[in-house]
Each structure stands twice: as C-alpha cells, then as structure tokens.
Image (tube, rainbow, N blue to C red; front, top):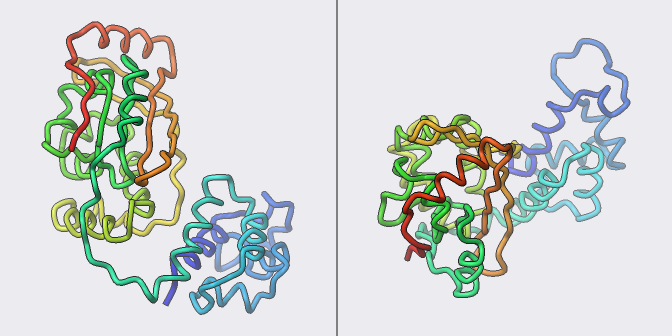
Length: 278
C-alpha cells in the first residue's frame, strides 16, 4: 500500500525527464521519467531504500534524506514545502483517528483591522478548506453577481464544485478546481478536511473526487475572472499565512492596466462594508 509521500516522489520521478537534470535519456523505456537508480544516485541513497519509500514500506525517512530527494528532483519551493508536509502526515498515518468536524470560522480582531487598512482593495481571509471568513468591500465588488458570497457561510471550494456559475466566473475553472482540491491537504485539521470531503463527494461528483489526494502542486498563476458585468479581470495573488488558526490573507492586485481600470470602476459602485462571517 502506497503513502502520500511515496506517491508524490514516484509521480515527480515519472514526470522528470533525465536530460533536464543533465542525465542521459537511456533511449526508449517502458516507464517515463527518471530511473530509480538515477534518482537514488543523485540523492545518495540506495535503490532498495528509495523503493521502500515509494512503495510505502518506509514511512519515516530522515530530514537529510527528504532534503536530498528534494535536491535530486530539483523541486521548487512550493513542492519542497509539500514534500515536508507529506513526510509529516505519512509518518503519523497509522495513528490518526478521524472524527469529521467543520473548521472554526472566527477571525482575530487584529486581522480584521488589517483588512480595514486594505480598503478599498481586494482582499479576503480564508482557510485552506475554502471558507470565506472575512473580506473587504473590494472583494465583494469583484465577486458581486457571481453567487460566491450568497451563502450564509460562503465556501470557495463548495462554490467551485457545486455552483454552475463558478465555471463562467473562473476563466480557468479547471486550474482553480485543482487548487481548491489540493488545499484540502492543508486544512486546519485532518478532521476538518475529512468533514468537507465527506460533504462534497456525493454532490460534487467525479470533478471533485478525481482530484482528491493529488500530489501535483498547482502553479497558481494569474487568476482570470469573467465578471458578470461583461468585464474580464486578470489578478495577481499575494498569499500570507496568518500566525494562528490555519488561516491565510489573500490580496488581489491588477495584473494589467485594463484590469486596474475595471477595478477602479467597480470601486466607484456601492459595495456595502467590510464583512466578517461567523
């Protein structure tokens, strides 16, 4: 039986072409990517040990071994962070007893004050489950008419996979869906992630379930939105992890002059006030 850690390493090995690392291609092969022997040699470990990790028979590789594998695979910073996370949860898999539970939705007063300082910019506080916990009036303006904030307790992941309007709002819906499903790895707790997964799986269908447990780190490029008013937006995202509560502050910035012009127009429309959702 495999593990998230072993699956990730094997998937990265299969998707890495030898020539990108300065290695010979070995000609035609039945399996794609790097040979186990090549990766083991680059990481300074035995092929037998790498096989045990990939197959889930060794669940507790040391930190130096994990770092050596990251170097050998030339992982980028986001992939290295995910590799460390998978190492952590793989080592404790056998002792985790899940009791599904929703995540807390309270936001610290200092975080709400930070949002006020960002007005009238586009900013939102979420957790990795996609719960929208607080947002600026700028965020409300950009998402107005999309249905995202209509629910009493808005959740971006639920919206992406169950609301037909999401496919029109997100120009690159599949990429956004990949991001939301991947972020369930980083939910506030295992229990919270299991709770949302159990809720969504029956109603969201294979578009959701096929993405569960993916070990491919999404690139999170420019976010392209189709505003219901007929205007297109291209936004950069700055994501800042908050000190407590497994929450993040996301600030959206125009990626081009046309988007900046559209955002300025939206700011001039009545948009309510800063909202904290409890």
